[in-house]
Length: 391
Image (cartoon, rainbow, N blue to C red; front, side, top):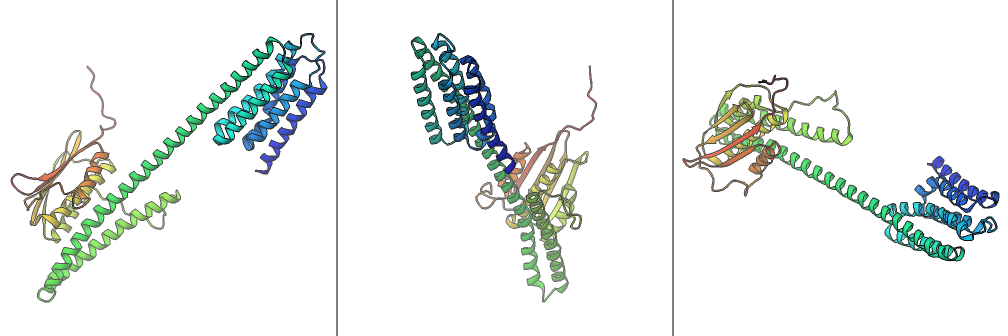
């Protein structure tokens, strides 16, 4: 930082030195040479412009005015021609002014534009004569207006880019919060429902049927450990994403559940008093991880609703592997419901969000013959490396 500051100040000092040489060291040069020299010399102010743009504007105004006022009038017989070339030095001021309009606060930009316009018009009014007074004044105003418009356009583009970036960040944060909410809801709601039912069974039979109470406690322990493992996996992944570090080798994480774990999920649900009939059809094959996890979570949430609300002892889970989609259906013959279930919780809302993110379709509602049905269709990507038939 100190080195950059020193370079900026050195550039400012070099600019003033070059202006001094143009004014006092080249008395026989034309006004156009002086103007172009001052315009090129403004490149030495780049460091000052980036750190202190208002100071850079003041230095550019001082240097350009010195070039216009310091050139001897005896060089040319036509003062108007000579001074018209010298006014090119004010283009350097306009360049700095455009940067100020782009980057500085609006109040500072307005003051800078007003001061710059006043100085340029005053100097032109003093040193230009005849018809060139009007011409030089109009050219100076047009150049100043062009630099301000370019600065305003650049400013609006930067502000628009910042607003878009902020919107993208906000949408990403919202999407991540919804994802975490879905994961925690699907994971915890199912486990807590099973634990509550098993705890109730165990408390009722602990005196009369110790063996059944023992099985209920074992189910509670297994479900609790699985839930804790899932919570730990979620929390650790969040902390690692926050630090931007890879997973720790000393604390490996269990893989995310998928359709291969549906039978285990059905066994846990059977322990809660609901027998689950799992049926698979089609050519079973690996599916992408996000689809696999979403399908498992949909089955998990549907079984949780059966345990908690259906009032039945049986349900059916059908998993169908199609050519272009994966279908998951959970059907029970319980009491059903009067709505879509979204008014009393977030289960079906979470399922719809999962399916929507994958471009699929979800239907959930009571069946005409009684009970409740949840059906999801998830599109599968085309297999990689499959030859395309040509005709």
